[in-house]
Each structure stands twice: as structure tokens, then as C-alpha cells.
Image 1: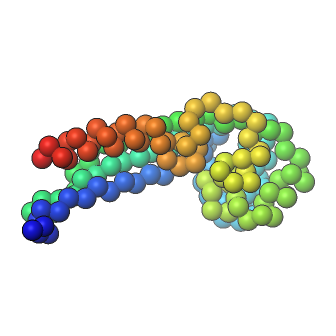
Image 2: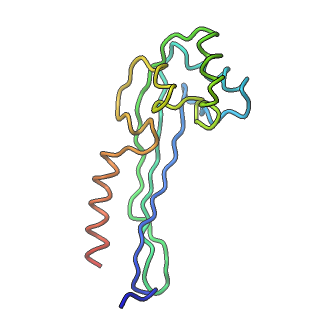
Image 3: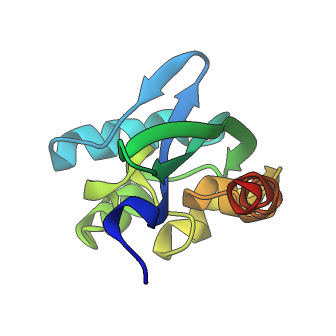
Amino acid sequence: TMTKESQKFLIVGSDTIVDLNGKILEKPATTEEAKYMLGQLSDNWHKVHTGVSIYHVGGKANEATQLSSFTDTARVYFAKLSPSDIDAYVSTGEPMDKAGSYGIQGIGGQLVQEMQGDFFTVMGLPMHRFSKELARVMSIVLDE
């Protein structure tokens, strides 16, 4: 019989930021801010950092224990964007809930000319590294 005390859970959290020469580009608050960010990214390299943490919750005290935490980084180069390119993209609404005002997995992928690193890091969860870490921490959890 599984009791509350014997249940074990893993909690995974991740977040992504866009870094343009050391300046963090967060989610835009307005369409004007989105246009400004995209203009800054145009014809430039930037970095995308995704941080991931894996916690184990379980036992009698139901305490959370961090099993893994890492950051993965990719470099992205935007094509040279005209003001009409930027206006058209912002009018889709896609940039408004995205760090750096773009989503590589959507329409914003058209803005990317080149990339170095894991595509999934830019999307928000570096799948290869996460899978390796998950396998490692599962061996710890299952051995308890």
C-alpha cells in the first residue's frame, strides 16, 4: 500500500533569458518595447541561457531536495530586420510573452539566421542535457 509518506515526486523547473552583450532582455511589456528589443537583436549575435533544476520531494517530512541544477547556453544570430519585418512579427502577438521578444519554435524562427548550441535550449528546455541529468538523478531516487 502506498502511503503519503512513501510517495516520491520529482519537480522540474526551468526558465530562459536572452542576453545581448550582458544586458538581459526580458518579456516585453508593450509592443513598442518588443519592437525596440527586436531592433537591438537585428543583425547581431546574442546568447540564450536556460537554467534547469530538478528537485526530489518525498519521505516523512515531505521535504524538497535539489538533485541537479544547471544552465545551458546557445548563441543565436538574427538576420538583418527591416522596420516592416519587425512590425509584421510584432503584429502576430507572438513576441509578447517571450524573453527577448521572440520564440524560435514559432514564427520567430524565421528571424534566426544562424545558431550555435542546442535548439531546445533556446526553446526553453535543453532536452539532451536534461535527459542525461534526469537519468542520473533517477538512479539516486530509485536507490533510496
